[in-house]
Length: 288
Image (cartoon, rainbow, N blue to C red; front, side, top):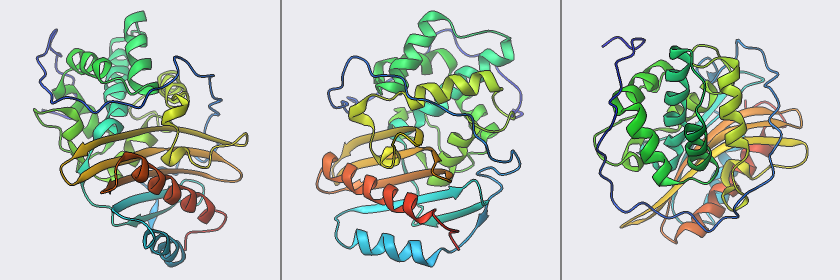
């Protein structure tokens, strides 16, 4: 099947999943967060940035992780300078970070059909992204179809993401693919037009307060973040992931982290947030 060709998505789709990890209790609503339009050159994207070694940042991350338990890998892309950095950026489970790809698939289908989000679709998309609602995710995945998610992942360039027949949380990916996914919803018209990218950015910027950790760590009145986190238990500990875009204080970057925590969700969340803050601080200057 040609990556650019759309195949009809099934009207209904059966989907079986294990008991989904429950999100922490969250407020019923949260105030909208500003989502400025990216200001960088359109020629700089997550896919065109040059990989650098960044020994100073490597040393800072290793010194911090020496005080923590668990494993962690990441990719950081400085969109202003066109540099990227990887640290132990190995494959892991997607968990709810992949909901951004499901949203992108829905928006791409509507774009191809010349249609807008319906009221029910908008409600489901809001619940899926801002509250990480798994039931809403199942509904939208059934609507768009797994073959279509695979097609859009190919358009995005997610070459190492495995979209299988099982539960979407246990699809596998790498930090680079997650960064390509996030970048695709805010930069190039290659996948989504400007209006539909704005829809995705607003949702990712409006995540409920209890889920604003990880890439959200440096958020302030002058630093704006649009991101999606994911987490869930496995026999050897929690998987704690974070993927998103950050702009402000002379920075613009995308960062994706896949981590495991043998001490539970809260501990792992703090570890990921700590590393995200280190990455933010490192971008005061060039990575290398």
